Length: 302
Ligand SMILES: [Mn+2]
Image (cartoon, rainbow, N blue to C red; front, top):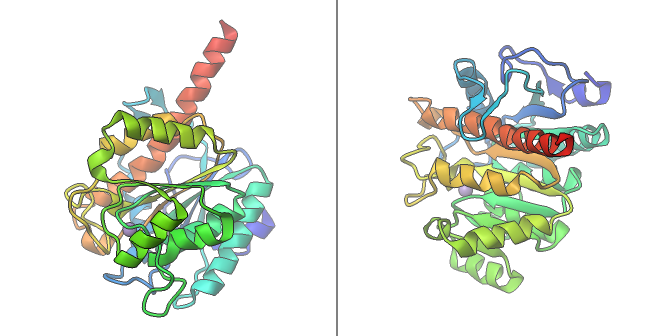
């Protein structure tokens, strides 16, 4: 592995997705950020990366939705970020170094959390100009109980460093202060009740087409707790996995500079169903892009 990247990462036992790949030959580089010491409700998301690695070992790498076989998947597991528990700033510094280096090597970082706090740092370091977030929460607080690096502030941190090019899906839990802020900033938001509408699909398409470099972030609590109970802050009336999968088709043509799945809390996931969904989201995101590549190749040949 690249020396500068490995400096901040430790290798782990099981790897995602379990097939043999190398750092050099892989475009997508998976790594964990096992940090949860700022969680506002239940801790435990530090075990998220480990659970995703465990559950993927027993899963098929065929995408039924996108009709592509991922046996030759080019995702390399680089291990977990050395996190400094209790110190989000120090952890974010290490993360920024890793992501910047990966991007300079032409790689796409695939991060698994851990707290959502780290998304804006990864997205900015990846050079994104647009952020697509699936989340129950707007994460637009100025601070949470005095902590400006709380996971409740993640999207606001992005807005303050990169402006308002942000699209949020699944939003249904916001404070009065956040609603005012989002309105003032003109944030595009869709609740789970709106995702099956034509206006949602056309707005998402327009947003993605206007993105020069897109970063996609999925907070697992975007899903209904029936599908993903393993999160720190569950919110009823959420998205279904199929709702989200359908949006991957819309994103597949974008210049994706980074992707993450955050807030998976295995301590609340005894059935491993949430972990399985988190693993599958990464597989399907990859599949959507591979399928598009294959379709374009076929069109070119014919
Ligand atoms: Mn959330």
